[in-house]
Length: 406
Image (cartoon, rainbow, N blue to C red):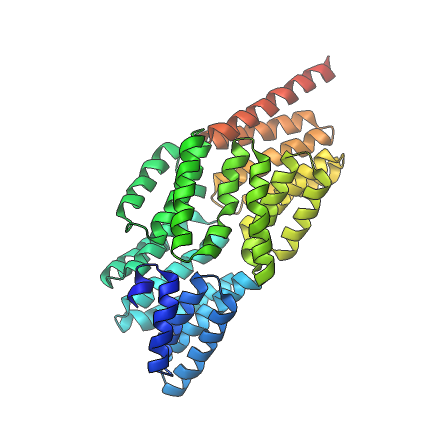
């Protein structure tokens, strides 16, 4: 479908619906129709169509379409119901790939490799994620499928944002990806938002807000309202870096309500954790703690970022509420989880929260060391704003330690 290939999700829903009415029982068409509904955030309809595709494929003996539909349904289940099973999905994708490669079905190979990369994204394993995406891009280009290429570019932007690549290299890389994306495509929208957060980390807040607005406007115009809501975790991060927690909360509340209404737990978990950060920054510590419970309840065990994020936010809230021992335990768990990833961004955030917890537990020297470790990771990434905050905390705790010794 050309509309799906050019990222116009609403147009794709309509056009594929008409095509499906003319060709009832076409499993491949039903899989594409389900993907279009998934992209506009109608997960229930996407699941229905994938189920119909599986039934049609089995009746027609179309093994490839049956596999594609089953995998798509499983992946939606991971996102919507926050079920575990990322490893199982990855194994099934790796078993399925040779079938599609042998058939020369480059478009589906690109789709499957992109979904494999999504599994690594959930685990915050940036290196393997990028390897899968580079393979996917080869097949997407071979298939001459702009939609598949767009999906890959979007995720390369995500990897640049949270991975170890320093900001002074990451920003030019994202500019190149933006230039290679089709005008007004979902890829351009997402890449602009990714680049906006890198700009904010570097302290360029006006540029960050401008790019973020442009990117979100593109996504909304393409019928990707659910995507625009999902990335409020990043647009609100710009506000938090700029010390505007009120603005962050104003962005996050509607997004949280949107995903609660549709029962989509994957994005809900991350948004609730980010809301906890915004509430903490406003001094509303009990409310922040409650938001971390919402995040924890929505989090899949395989969504490592969400598992880190709610622990980081809870650590800070507990520390401010005088519950230092609980805060230190939760912060240590967050640091351990972050250690399973190759994201210095998440590791630094966990260490900074642990520093606050140790300070609250009366362990100023241990807190100072954690703050210094966080500062070094932030500096290596190029996040000058967060590095300055970590430095200020380490200096405060050093002074506190000196007074105690004196």
